[in-house]
Image 1 (tube, rainbow, N blue to C red):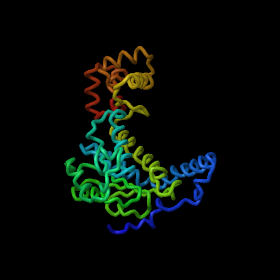
Image 2 (image 1 turned 45 degrees about the horizontal axis):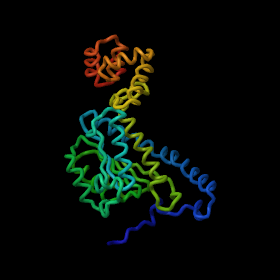
Image 3 (image 1 turned 90 degrees about the horizontal axis):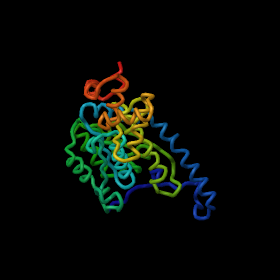
Image 4 (image 1 turned 180 degrees about the vertical axis):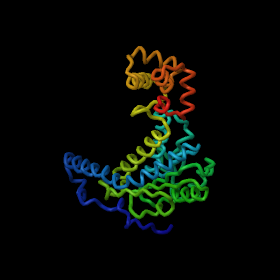
Length: 299
């Protein structure tokens, strides 16, 4: 196997603040680690223009029936799978709308799958299985910025005329050359040398949070700052749904509970019923006409 040049990767360099990590007191180690973590948000901030471009592309894709597809290996892949999975209960979308792919498949969520991340072909094949189309957006995630699995996916995305977005934690990343929109977040050397589940992972999580959350805002899944498409699948979420109705319409708990039931446990429908004096059927029709944007039904 050819030697992989890691010397140029900031994520592989040693952190001067932790050269004697194994000799630090617990108090010192906690303080230094916390100080390192505080740098992450500032590093993400530098890439806000690129992140905004990515979000705009996702919103446009979702509005025309496309999908948001994350793909990565190891920690990067797990973070993509996590963000995709959280969109289902939070925004009431189907699991097919936001998809997370990890090199090596589901098994790789908990156990390393040898060689999976080194396969360009596997990245392509995983997207082929999803029947990728030009309407989709693929976000390739790699802290190193050089993962072959991600490169294979991004190349296939561009061949299919889907939008290809890269997310790396090194500057001048190789995957950036394979994307139309390149996000490069340099958080400096890790607290523990090469452990990119730390600052790099935090930077990736923050970025994915923005991409998914603000994309969902862009397609009408939010009213003011309330998650009005939340699926009330357990006791906590049922109570959250009722609280959302109370917050959005200034009604009391009993009224919110009544409309929650009347709406068929659909928060958006309950809101439009209350805010416009509509029946359930009328509220559903208004929402269809306004493509799910609650605020638009009030005009």
